[in-house]
Length: 332
Image (cartoon, rainbow, N blue to C red; front, side, top):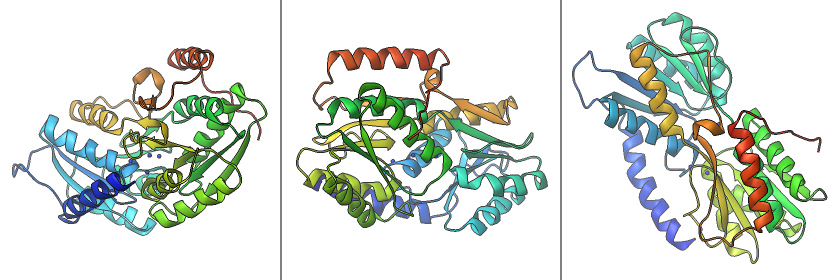
């Protein structure tokens, strides 16, 4: 589906330098034993984004550290590369190959049957057979809670959402955000923008400035590296808040961050890898919802507290999600 200020600019540049070296170094084989458990990851963007792709690489590292897996990572740029790299890893006999995003599902379905000994997984979409599975994150549930928080904080009654591209999981999260906001403030108005890519921070900043000029004072972004521009614009504005996504982004600009819609991708990847090792994968779709703690709303501890009535309602709604209820989305 999703990790996306002066101090964090410096931190970000250091991360980009280090992680770019890691990403470009190709396959990581800490164990030369050919029988080692081998896992590969394809990401649609840089693992320096401090959002969706960064959390996926953290998951890859966790599989290495916890399971002794030999790991490999490639950043893909086009749909043709999705299929090409899936096929290369299948031909090499990798045990698990993960395409990190909804957009990888068609390539996985085409390539998977050719390599039945390899498990192909995508984060998003739907699985399509015994060795082609999908991890489904209930991103809409914490997004709903984020909407409730946004409605409690807005002074103008105008909130915004900014996405990378209009993928179904992103759109669903934004719809849930609006539904949660309307539960607290029925008259709230939502501005929506899509950047058209996941890595142009300048475009993310421009879209944010446009929404701020239309009186939006809480903006929820799901745009990976492009989302860093959203944080920059909100930080420079006065009296506005930003909501992070995919990773815990509360530390990127803590003085203007209301909270983060977190997807604990590393935990989900580790669970999948353990099932793969034990041949107990229950596919074709593995769903992670609030009860799993893989998806959750993480309020920024340094942000002003929400009204007690809203916090109590959010706790009640979260309990309903944990019990299996789903967000009720309303027409825009």
